[in-house]
Image 1: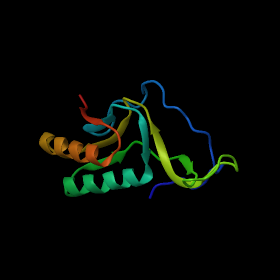
Image 2 (image 1 turned 30 degrees about the vertical axis):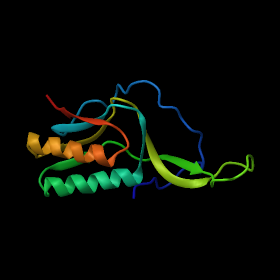
Image 3 (image 1 turned 90 degrees about the vertical axis):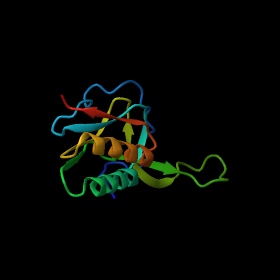
Length: 135
């Protein structure tokens, strides 16, 4: 599972993902890319499951580049707990995603396989995605 090696603080504030991604929105090295169309958070487990399914579908041909990394710790309190008594304990690592953010780049497959891979990724993630092509 993906997580950072060293962090300064165990618990951080909740950030709001407002706006549209303008920096990482086109494939640079890969021929195809999978882009998020809505905002949300992707956990480290979701990234790993997407990576495994994509590698299985590509059948060891081509290259896969993951453009996101889970760096944000998420905490949660147990259910039926009274108010107060501080912040909850650590639950999982996640990566905040803005709409238009490129999540994954890949190459070495045909267009039909890329469409199938996009469907698989869409079912694994909690976000809606679309396939983009490098021109």
